[in-house]
Length: 593
Image (cartoon, rainbow, N blue to C red; front, side, top):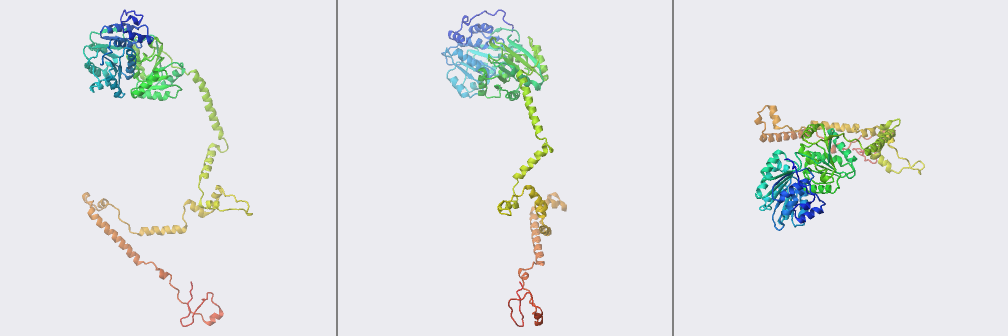
């Protein structure tokens, strides 16, 4: 598309044949003189012509199609008369707000139809008689197939960011929606870039369009200062942090990344800064995306990290810096990204961080650009960082000196810490039985007045070393009597017949039987039971052959002793004389117990 050589010279919107209420609304917005694209596009739209318009970013394309459309729609009709399709939800929300302002004085209703939001309120807005629908293609098709939305009397179809809408991701949905609308519609296509292939496709969907352009090829506004610097991939976050810290208090940053994961990774890094940092990409739900964009438009956010979802049509006038954290894929994407700054005649800065991995892509962008992008040096450490750094270094060094000097003695810091740890373990160790009894027993000195001091842990260890039985108990050793009992029990258990616990498969392998005969569960159980009975019978026979002594035999009374003669009694008296006895042939029996 070639730029229009002689654009009309219009000094005020009053010179355009717009509705009086719409002109009053534009005046309340503070807009007096139309931009070149507005002066070129409004009059053909009012005359009923199809439009293919190309203009730089930030030149007022929304008002160029919104003002004539809202002036021509009949507010008395309760049907969808205007349809505006956008590639992103954020852009749809922005366009809807502008159209609401323009149509409110005339009583026109605008419905926002986007995905990621509940369909109930959107259906209610359609049923309330909305004359203008602004939405994304996916949700528009969904509501149309559910019979909540129809276009029998639609007069205007607008494709905002038309080059994106005619790409592979949207072209099928756009074709389907255009088939839903009448052939007598008025089609308006607006974008900042129109490659030749997309321009030919745009002409196929318009009827004798009026092509207007304010620049040839791809071009950006002159109020944007563009530059780039080369930096390693690992140093990109630090370079961005330095730019934010060295910026003014009123500066606002919009940082573009290539992938969602890169956005999240950079957000975690920048959240440590004392600034308000937000993120935006397609993975967030719609309410979160609207909330972030609302805070960003109000100036509550210092830096917004986003994917290319924020590069299309977003109108935030106070953005002063656009940073390409990752190099855009083409000069078209580069143009849309940096177009978020320097809007409405303001000055802006566009900075691109070029890593060695993306140097080849950036070389392609430079060759396709028709303007000059200056190369600059990476930002150095700012004054605030330079002041903070020595203090931090001194604080760290002083802490290290204190740590080194605290443990300087003849044993060293390691021995000192080990001694402290050992003393803490001794304090927490529970008392043994002898120690607890000694603690509970009341003790006194020789005089009976002064209490006896309890032994220390060191004394307890010394006593254990001097006392062999105590040392054996502490080490888990057995006494000789206990060791002999354990030896006897061990040999008795070994002599006992044990049960054969081998499986039938193991016995079959030992006997050399075939594999299919190794599992014979029906024969195995009787044999096992028989072997158990034989073992028990053998044990009973062994017990009977060696019977244990009976209790009556153990306690049998002793045999009677012969009674001593009189000569023996006279010579010596027996030591253990019986207390009582009886005379006779039988003699006397002593108890002897």
